[in-house]
Image: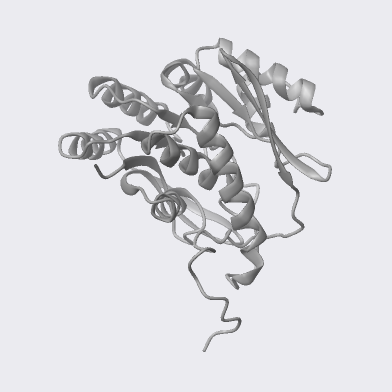
Length: 272
């Protein structure tokens, strides 16, 4: 059987994050990727310049088209900027009995540009969170979902993850990429207990798409039959290697993308 994962997210015209990063990640990890686009963004490594939301009924039609024909093993959900789209996504996934749902509550781009309307945050928390096998907020996103300040240490990260889990998510992975220290630490709050996933913090400005890449890598692992902790550990290793190789790429003048295909591309340096 071919492992299949569906990404439901926004399009990044610069191809470092969003749908494009998700499909690259699926492919890099041996999973066939399908997509349902929720928004079009005009963006590059310097920022987000415009957002065009896809109508909710058309988002639903894309999801229906995929599930009516493909055997989807996991779903990654990214940018959902409007309440109607969130409700449409939740409704169609419930109708199709979707499993292994990884929700990355994308709220702010790496450039600092907002990607979700304020009124959509409550809808996300109340409608989609209870359907999630796993949620993967970073420090600012976890704080915004709870209406609190950002966690300052691992103990606070675990507490916020557990509070989010108690709101309905199956498990919550609070990502520490925005934190400080020699390690980038993510903490998992799950019903079966907590876990810690760490990788060396890498000095590079080319980290565009790391959150999208991590969540889609976890979905890829679930689609291939890994259990949740194993899928997270595999995804953490993959993203760390993609960040470590990011400076081998020369993409744009701002925050460049991670290197999704670092295992396969030759390091040719400058263009030939």
